[in-house]
Length: 358
Image 1: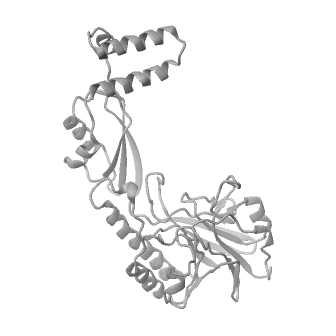
Image 2 (image 1 turned 180 degrees about the vertical axis):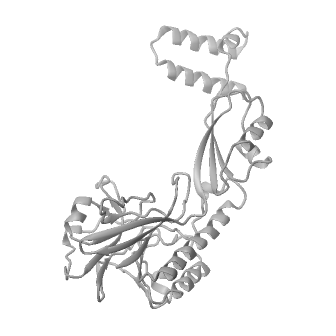
Image 3 (image 1 turned 45 degrees about the vertical axis):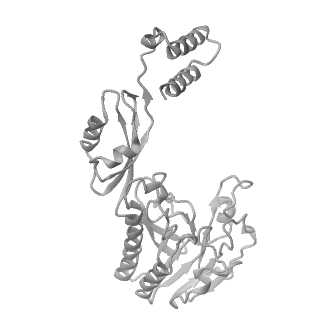
């Protein structure tokens, strides 16, 4: 049995983290559509009979009906493919949600509250829906397979092996999931890919289909699988048009913002990547991130973070006959005493000088 497994597309997400530069959020929302189109085209071209969507297909707070219509029209293009959706914490099965009020095409099966079973000729699919934006956990041990002679799939959204007491997104233990005896467990919620094609792995997170922020670096896409009773073959296929990457740039030797922009524009950046630049080192000038965005900056650089420290000539400052000089002398004396951690005092020195400058 061949299938495609995706999760966490988060259609119509605001992309706040990526909105540092003009209309990038809107661009990424368009790329969400392109990503699902790629998934559907792959299914058509390879005659895939099952598509498993493990929750957070869309953002309940932001989703537009036009986007739901776009998704549904794509689903109509694969009428011979059964599409199973297990709503998650961002797209819970609510009375007024599109899962409950929209007329989905007939090949879409949306799991509603409580564990449900779709019984097919060759496979039974078990699923469960979030009914709120939080779920403290279902009783995993109570799930029982009806027919062990068929292939059995479990489709769930939630967190495995976290702190069970503190996690409110359907916390589960991998050991309990393994004991259930399913041939494949399609999970969603964790945006990082978690699978190993060499280990006959049966409990899988495909990760988010496209990167939603710079806490989701690397490639994103879908899992394509082929299951038999004694064998699971999995392949990860990248889908996202743009990979997110981080680069640290030391600006210690840079004298002004114009030179900084020149340095950034000379970086060897890949065309199909979006970059977060982390500025490090000692700065000789004040940095205003939003001023940098307004300058002629490479469009592949979408976010800049300033982790620099001021380039302070402590000895020269200590000789100044003013409040700043007096402050520096006091801090240096404390450092010499060694009674307080040196790094703490150095931080106090930086903060204090920054305040005095203003």
